[in-house]
Each structure stands twice: as structure tokens, then as C-alpha cells.
Length: 239
Image 1 (cartoon, rainbow, N blue to C red):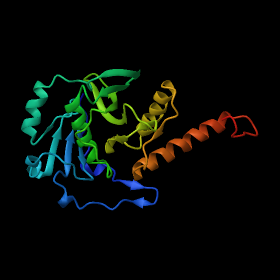
Image 2 (tube, rainbow, N blue to C red):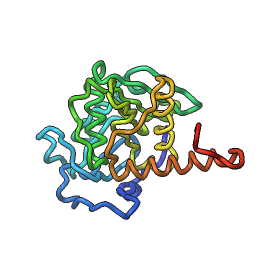
Image 3 (cartoon, rainbow, N blue to C red):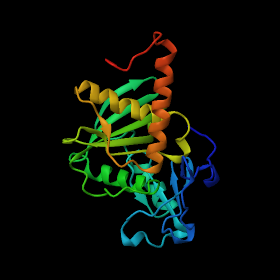
Image 4 (tube, rainbow, N blue to C red):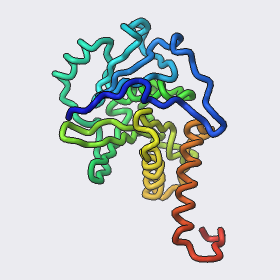
């Protein structure tokens, strides 16, 4: 499906309720831009890719939007595109609503995909520390489906067995997909999973700056929606 690529300037920078985060000098980043599907996206932080990726042409990494394999060049990405048969994340599709689809991916069964996903997200999350030890986690990948396949939008991960009932360990939406409601949908889905598991559910603490902003926005909207149809003289007891 042809569309016009969006340049790096369309990738919003990190921000917090109190203002922008301290930006890392792009010259210090080993990878300054990723080519992801039709998008060129400026990276915000460094990620621990193998040493051979320390010096790549123009500081640009090419990533397959379906299997998340990363490559050094346009040529390599073109060859991969001709051979790659993936059209959606591995794992089970557990939710579908029109063009929106969510896949549950097991870190043990799909180790390489989940490791690549963690490396991708590190370039946009300042506090992310999990990269290769993915086996104890489940990853919930949200996609937008078109005639070609299920295109990656974002994800959240959670521990398979969390003693504190955390329902989110890490959450990320691609910068070019932010401010479109995808983050709220991911958060809402995490609470629906907790409800199905008959757990209270809560994101892992402490929240990152962007995470705190996302949850504040989610709960603000949730309270407004409740108040729209709530009875008069609401009491917190029993709610």
C-alpha cells in the first residue's frame, strides 16, 4: 500500500508534564535514525545493539516492521523484504476490532522477536533496562491491519508471574503513532487483562516520565467518562 514517507522531523521528541526531557546530542548516538516501514524516525536514546552496528552509513538502521529484524543498509533491507514471509507479529492474535489487532507474544517461544522489540523500544524509552532476558515476559503488540499485513504500532510487556500484580512492565508507541489514542488503548487493554485474570493490576513503579504522562491522561479521560453518566452525589465508598 503506497503512501508518502514521513521524514525525521515528524517524529515528536520526548516530553514530560514539567517540560521537555534533556535531549541527547544526536552526534553521540550510534543510531540516529531508523527506517521503519514507510517512516524515517529520529531516535531519542542509544540502544545496546551489537558492536558491529556502532558505525553504519549515516547512522541509519533499517528495521522490518513485521519481524523486527534490523539491518545496516537499504540494500540489505531490500533483500530481506523480498524473502521475509512475516505479515504480523508471532504468537496468538487475541483481539481484533476492525483494522486494530493485538497479538500476545511469549518471550520464551519467540525470543529473537522480543529481543528485537526491546532494542527498538530502548531508542525511545529513557529508563528501559530489559533487552535480552525476555523469557519471563509476555508482550502485547498492537497493530493496524491493511491489505499487506498487520503493521506494528506499539506494545506493552508484563511479567508472567508478578508477585505485586503489575500488569505493565514497559509500554511504548512509535513516535510517529503517538498522540493518536494508541497509548490509551494499550493501557485500557492491560486493565481488561487484569480484570479477566481477577487481579487489581497496576503498572510497574516507578513510572518513566512519558509513562506517567500517559497514565495521567488515561485516568483523566476515564474519570471524565464516568462522570458523564454518573448519578448525583457520588460517593467513593463501594466504587
